[in-house]
Length: 398
Ligand SMILES: *Cc1c(COP(=O)(O)O)cnc(C)c1O
Image (cartoon, rainbow, N blue to C red):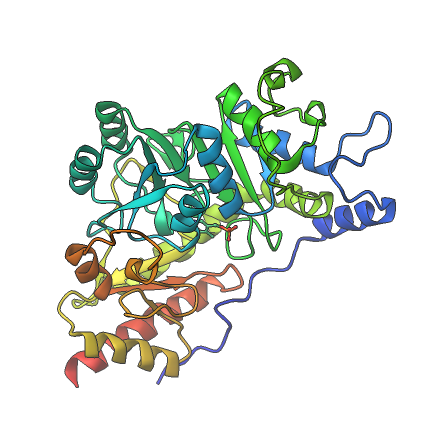
């Protein structure tokens, strides 16, 4: 029997040049982003410039987490108490949490069989709810048909905010994920595409939105120390009535992120190589349904999803248990109660008027999910795929 023994939660070490940059910051003692000496630009400011340039947008703000960036993006886009915000029912808890934090209520939209937001349901709910904001979560790196997403946004005059926690480095039809809406947010938490423990970004091309976001992030009156930012005049009107919701990034994190960002595209290729190797093996297992990905989607597959459409709930749970016995950690999104990082939409019980979403429940009940840490070699990924196929066959024949 094949088994695997590496950890599914072990990320790569921080690269040596990033460690050296962090040590340099610590030697100066100037860890706060606004603590600079004459003529110096802080690592945080430089990181924002790097990220804006990487994304091809004028403005970027580095902040304390991805969830914080989502919250501030909504506030800066004009979300107010009592507003409705459309969002994916299949996402992670920080997304509805950020909507709640901005005083709004989520309107949950179904998932489709490729784990994207269901665009028919989006169209229906945009119409029936009258919501003016849409937070799309490119959950697990699956990018919905953005041509149609944009058409729906136009039809209902929706302001789109993209949650790109899983699509840093990805594109739709040659256009970077995160450049479709009025703003986009990223996470640099340990399990995302670049790692500073905690951290995040907000990007936009909208001058007023960024000016507000910078004020919210806790710039005091030091907004002139941002260069991936609008000129100081843009702050004239808003600086007295935009509250400070302190959530800045610090120079230590920024220092370790800059070298990682410079290497991001290379890392994305490494993920995709591993994903392709797994798919090549798993496609030969009849019981497994792999995700169909449109040609326009240039994804970054740092995780893999598949489903077992003909398996009962008991069989799926047996697959998870037997895979775990053999050292392969699969996550199941169908559980009634939240478990680890995963939770089903109906566990966010603070949401008013919780809808019942039978389509989403049915699809999630057969969905399995696995992280692909870059500490796994290509051979590791092949072995894992073989183990998954063996286990699926074993449970099927049982
Ligand atoms: C991680 C994550 C976030 C938020 O990131 P944090 O930095 O942990 O706050 C948002 N959306 C999704 C889908 C995520 O996975």
